[in-house]
Length: 365
Image 1 (cartoon, rainbow, N blue to C red):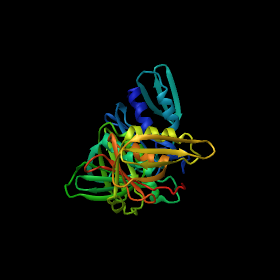
Image 2: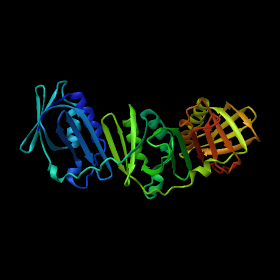
Image 3: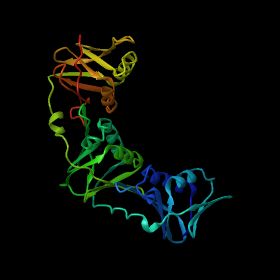
Image 4: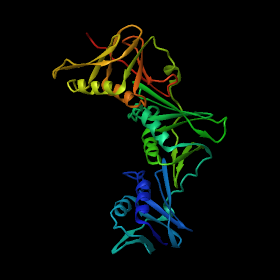
């Protein structure tokens, strides 16, 4: 194999591919990045049996070929190369990288032992990368980090025609975001569970262009601007989140998001290790309170509009802040029933696309 490639293009593609490399690969070859040069393209691939990544860039290929190079070493090396075109040549058991006056010989790994990457399943639709990244970021904080309950560590994807809904829960809150996309067929319906950690990374790195989504045979695929990722699906079992989020609370409070977030953060500074905040809703304001333990206490008033009875309710502050940070409107609508029932947070819209249900806390007077 012999080729020339732009230094920045190579470094970016290697870094994107290397992000899925396992820190402790089950077999040594899974720690490698496969370079495949053919025609006018260089394709870099990585695979850990759960997630695959493949990036294709333009290159001047003098001699086509394949080689497998330790991925983390390649990633560190390419990002530190001088600003010159890179030549890659394989000779015997080495891949020789030349960039300006710098030359490195990297020991290659046996290509024949590298597993075949999964094929991309059939495309079912496409969505803007920015929209997908924003939607994933809104629901991902509600996914559990407890691997003993795998169902709760994923994000549920429900597709019906031109509507997509993402949902996640850790038993203490539920977040769901609905958005429109461009399906391949108007009657398409599908459901999938994807690791929240993996989906966050995919959405973040593909946000620059339109993302094609493919689904089938236990695999979901994402492709954009020469980069494609496949992920093995999790078990589809998930809670009936729609019924929980469709409840119509008896009390609604409308509060400006930014002042409420700032008040919660300030009063939480004097709270104990697991900070709780108490919200007391009146006719035209909400009193935000925290503390009262060994450190001290804090209170702040924020303007609010209330439709229904006055009510006092408490939450874990970080759960409440996660929900507020997912909103895209300047005002939040908070639906309440009793101090002991969950509260529903939505965008300030007639048909909100983001819904967040959060458990309340029992606090003494």
